[in-house]
Image (cartoon, rainbow, N blue to C red):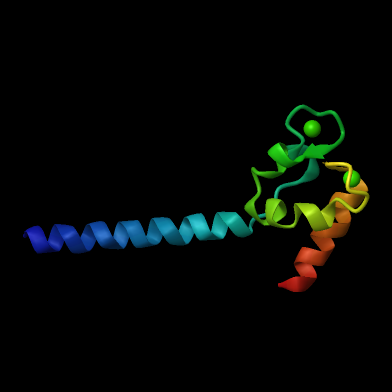
Length: 83
Ligand SMILES: [Ca+2]
Ligand SMILES: [Ca+2]
């Protein structure tokens, strides 16, 4: 019985991880990431999207520490093409 519980628990954990993995691929929109709605995404705001934060330096074309909608669109297209 204990063994069964352990296996069932493992399966639940595994399916939970699969769902979490799927969520990471789901890219957020600019407005969702721009928490304070000031029209730019900071590195802190970008950290809500693991994929974006990994590409933040590349995405920030003019290196001012913020992503504009145009910079965001560009990196989103590049990330889609990379997949
Ligand atoms: Ca912002
Ligand atoms: Ca920028």
